[in-house]
Image 1 (tube, rainbow, N blue to C red):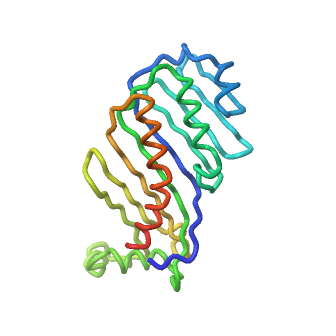
Image 2 (cartoon, rainbow, N blue to C red):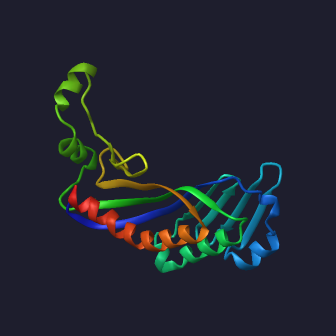
Length: 208
């Protein structure tokens, strides 16, 4: 793909963890040290909500799962959200992470491509005419999803048109790893992989 513009829309870090008791978490300590300005704990559901609404940053932490979301459109390594993630996780009860996911959502513009739906169809879909005969309708556009790697360590890539006849390519790349890690090894992994994955995302698109 000949990329002319790449716009990062959202970065999400997801972890599946051994169950923890969020009742043990000090909300005052979270408020002072996590880097989030808005803190809300739903005691009945055992869910902790953290936000920086003015920055488009948030986290949802449950007994067996955490999720950190950044919608600033910037690299979370460059804007410091990765440090907020590390600080927050360090304030939780002892973590054992079973799997970790890094998810990027972006809008991409390609050189000399005006209709992304048709572009995906022509590049990735074989025998379009066969489908059209079966359904007795023209195929207006296509999207595609690919899994690369193994079940334990893979990338889930989705390419789709933002609108049927427009020039914006929607892209979502999710990296999954079964990790079975303590806090220190988890942070070491993220510090290594987050900068790598932001570069890998663009490389994958260029090579497709």
